[in-house]
Length: 478
Image (cartoon, rainbow, N blue to C red; front, side, top):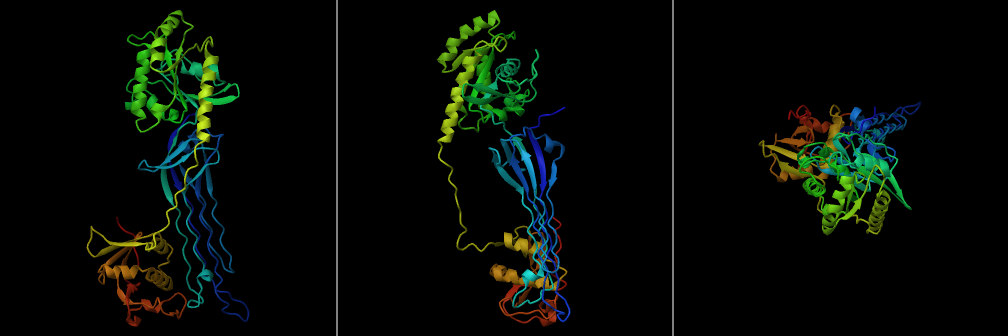
């Protein structure tokens, strides 16, 4: 049996980037033909795509963990690894993506709209791409970057033109069945409707959709009844229709009091929707096929008209008044579509990086003495891609950090020898040693870096260098 699911938690994991390859070309008469290690492949992305044929989030309710493919590692002879297979997840039109803190990340409307939930990891470069005039045959390669892992909340807000609201058993499901080909469950007891129903109505040249939500009762905005979980489905509606039961036998209830109660709940639930009060409303006095209901409808119509409502006396059973109601709704929907089409296109704001932006920041750790935290996409990515059991790779990382200006900034902040430096998930010891990052340093043996030896360190400017036996990173405990 199919279920309607309009809110799920999705655990998306993008693919890891493939590692670069360390390889040296060898053939007859060319024992050292140069580095030929290929690059790894990029990890696959996890992408949400709006598909009009999808109407529920049920698939993600049963399969909340979704992962993209990993990139393949590079190989010798300049062979690059294949990219990981991307994962495209189809979602209904009107899906809103929230992060774990409730902030809106994307509002997907319109067929084909896409949002990248998790980006695949960058590929690691092979030693052929790392070769330079100083490092003619690098004995190391860069590791592939791990893919992003995101936990997001998917929330569906139906893209209906008209929303039907009212008390339980007011006749909303009967009305949508009479106006369209939809066949919702109809019974003579409250809360028959457990999920929103959608129907397509044709009125002249205008075709529009109608949605009804489970019946509202006083206190629905505070969690009473079923309407709280589904009120979001009428947030995007261009027109709201109050379906009022004129044949109710409940004491203390009448169409006017029902209208006031529903309006109060809407105002409380949608207090953050600025234009809700400006949304056109129509009142449908239902069940006039009952003589007493017709008399009551005639009695309250003048009062509702004085409040500014357009009032239609209808019967979902005999279909009386439905044609006039459908054409009135079509006119309002057409006017709303015309106003949206004439809206000016949204401006795209481009925020260029500041001239003095170095791409990283260094700050003391307020919770621990002699500890400095380096933040920035470049240094954090470089650390993740470093193979720390290879001295030449560690020296290459130190050179990159020195050229970026990390060591100079640490010296400005008064970092002393032995201070802890945190970059991403790794901790290093700061050793004021003399570096050769700005000189023509050339490694003597592949996979080694004599600068890591305590006995061979020359004296020069302070910089962040890898001290062998002390600078092996470890994952933070907290």
